[in-house]
Every structure is written in structure tokens, then in C-alpha cells.
Amino acid sequence: MDRPGRPHPMQLFGVLAMIAIVVSVIASDEAPPGLSGEGLAVSLALVAFLAGIAMALPWGDIPDQPRILGLALIGIAACVFAALQPDGAGFTGVYFVVVVSAARLDLRPAAILSGLTLAGVIAAFALFRENAAATVIGLLFAVTPWFFVMRLLRQAGRRRAEAEALVEELRESRAAHAESVALAERGRLARDMHDVLAHSLSALALQLEGARLLARDRDTDPEVVAAIERAHHLAADGLDEARAAIGALRGDAMPGPERLRALADGFGDRARLTVSGEPHALPSEARLAIYRTAQEALTNVTRHSDAERVELRLAYERDGTRLEIEDSGPGVPVPAGASLGGGYGITGMRERAELLGGRLDAGPTECGFRIELWLPA
Image 1 (cartoon, rainbow, N blue to C red):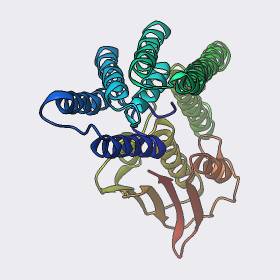
Image 2: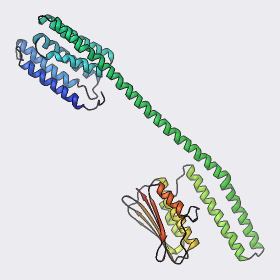
Image 3: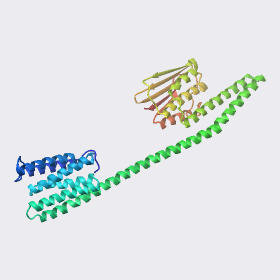
Image 4: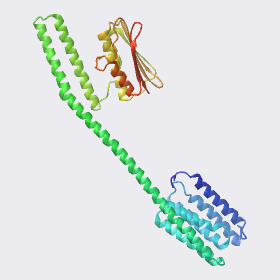
């Protein structure tokens, strides 16, 4: 009942054992199979019996009509065996009909097939066997309970299948609800960031631009003008980052490895990007981690080092993706946890990598500083 697609070992053993016993007993009976008279009838019944078993196996997704026809052939064969070989084992086909029909068919066809087969075998015993009362009573009490037992097993199997289906629906419903809640929360965060952070940064950038123009018109100290310009650029960059974060919360495509070339170009002739391996698709969070790590590492080089050269190496490996950023030149390494361009620091980058199942190593080299990010495939 639990494996309708393929036979359970006990099912297979039971069917083969029944066939072997029935065939051997029928062949050795006083009225064996033959080509004329009762022997011909026994031979035809044996063929019908074997064909019926092949058509009505208790396993597999067999349509009802072939299975009913197969069970009917077995029932007819069982009646013939009971009539021509009253002391043989052919009547055991009634057990097969009752058990399989009760387990695999709806109640109405199962009851009709089982009832007709049992009635036919009982009639054959009554007509062709002496003192058949005890045999008939024994057969009734032996076969009838099997019908109800198999019906109970069938119902139990259906109830369990329904329960499993309900559990799966509940699991899918909870997953859908969780996803809906997450999307709603991301939408709320996106709106708040747009209304508060992006608006504030936009206003700050405008104010700094006005202050820069005012300072230049009034011949303010050039260092003050340069400081205002740097502040304006920082505000503009922050506004771009805020807009990118809002877009990510709303499901827009996140920046990834394809943006590394632009980062390197923005660093001038001092930066060089090398890509090796066969590029493969990366999850959105992994793509963003690669981009953010490179972005913050380059910003760190700009702020804390006078590097003569910066090497960016992106390697698509069989078991993951590796990003290395190494600068060469005088400078002071950034302490662990120090704030980088995006406000995360080495600790933040390492935590981002670990959340994705990867790792981040950072430390000074003989002539500079090196950051290595590895993310699993």
C-alpha cells in the first residue's frame, strides 16, 4: 500500500509463491491440465489464472479496467479449479481477488468482484465436493475478514496521503507568508530610506554645492573650497549608494563582478583587474559581496595609502569564487573593524562573507596591504 509504483519484496514473494504452489498442485492433481475434456478446461483456467495475475498485479499504476478484467479472469479460473479439482489449491485465487480488489479498487467494484468470486467458488464446492459445508464455512470466515482489513488499510493510506498533502500545503503557505512579510518589510525599509536618508543626502549635496560656489565666489581659502568639494563628493556618493540600496530592497539587480572594471578604471592607471577561470552565475548576495568588498578596499587604499599599484584579481574556481585586492606602496594598514568607504570595515566585510559560507582574510604584506575574499560556489 505504501509503494504503488514498485513491488515491496514481500508482495513479490507472495505472488511468486502463490503462482508456484497453485501451478505445482494443479499439475499434480488427479485431473491435470490436458488438451481434451476436463484437462483442456483446467489448462484454459490455468492460462486465465496466470494472465489475470499479470493484468492485476497488486502494485503499479494499473488502470482500473485492466485490473478488473484480470481479477475477473482469476475469479473464473478459481471457480473452474474448485469444480474440477476440489482438493487442489486453485481456489486460493479467491484470496488474491479479495485482497487486491479491496486494496486497489473503489468499494463498489471491489465488493462485486469479491462477492461474485467467493459465491462462485462456494457454489463449485457445494456442487462438486462431498461434505462441503465445513469447507464453505471455513472459506467464508477466512476470506471475508481480509476484505475489510484491506479496505481499512486503503483508507488509512489515503488519510495519510491527504495529511501529507495538507502538511505540504501548510509548509508552502508558511513559506509564501514569510516571503510576503519579508517583501512588505523590504518595501517599508525602501520607502523609509527614500523618504529620510535619500532626501537628506540629496538636500545635503545641494547645500554643499551651494556652499562650494559661494566659497569660490568670495575668494575663500582654497583648502576650504577643496574640503567642501570633498564633502560634496562624499554626499553625492552616499546618495548614489542609498539609491542603489533602495533599488536592491525593491528587487532591482544588484551590482556584481561586472562592475569591477569600472571600479578599477576609476582608480586610474594605478589599478589593474585580472579575471581568470570560466565565469558562472552567482547568487545576488554573493555578487553584491564581491562588488562591495572591492569598492571598500579601493576606498581604503585611497584614504589610507599612497599606493603605486593596486592589483585586483577575480578567479572563478571550481568550488567557489576568489577576489584579491593587493596594493603596493607606503601606507598604514586599516585596523580590523575600521570604517571603510561604505561604512562597514574589515569586520563587516568578514561578517558578510561568513554569512554566505565564505571567508575574508586581510592583512599587511611586505610592501602594502592585501584583502582576499572567497565565496563557495
